[in-house]
Image 1 (tube, rainbow, N blue to C red):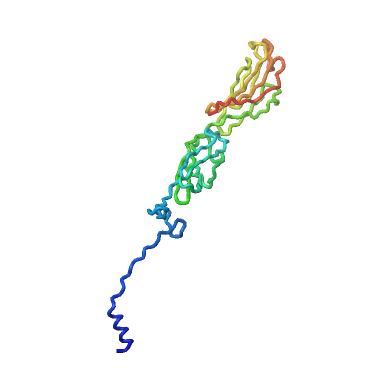
Image 2: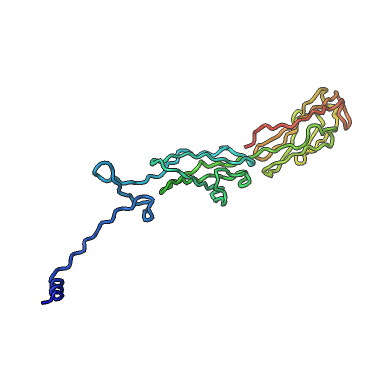
Amino acid sequence: MSRLHLLCVLLIACDPLPLVPVPLEPVEPGGLATTPTTPVAKKDTGSAPVLDVNRAPVITRISVEPGMPRTMDDLAATVEGEDPDRDHIRYEYTWLVNEVEIRGQRQSRLPHTYYAKGDKVQLSVLAKDRQAETEGFSPLIIVRNTPPEITTKPGSLRSVDGFRVQAKDIDSDALSFHLEGHPDGMTIDASSGTLSYQGSERAKAGDYAVNVVVEDPDGGSAKWAFGISVAAGSGGDKPAGSQQDNAESRHDGRGR
């Protein structure tokens, strides 16, 4: 028998070797095949394997200032957190006004142009590490009323009768005027702020510190003061004596 025939006989007679599965080593974190939520076995100094399980970051504080904003106040958030694995934390911000997301505003500040009096503002924060995330919310904030502002300059008063005190309101509220500390015969139009003064014989002589008060429907107010000297029993359409040119505008901070 030739050597070739002998080799063929040997190959036919031999059983094929069984296929033995080769276990694959798990992929370390950061590898292309790693699934973020899958624990990974890592060798420790001991004999038992250790599971490397990522833990989500924790948000410890979300605050928004001012806590009781008015219409013209911008909002600024402060967020603090910690990661149990000491991973770097990245924060993502979403502002909600009346439960509607403000698109394009992903920073920790929100300009006042995005809300008005009575709106409800809240901040949603996502704290993210390399694999996990945690969501948190700020306390709900309600935008308060802004008091009106008197725009008439103090030095512009020359004659009381017919003089108009002007005011504006950021919230576009309807305003009403009234007087405090005024002598008899002096009135003001509640809607326009126009003063009227006709000397009264019942007026008591003396110096009067008059306050023009303007109010909005929510109780916010502003005051504008001027002084006037009146002689007893003065009649006619002009105050007796001279009015003092020292009017000043004040706010009392009662706005809600």
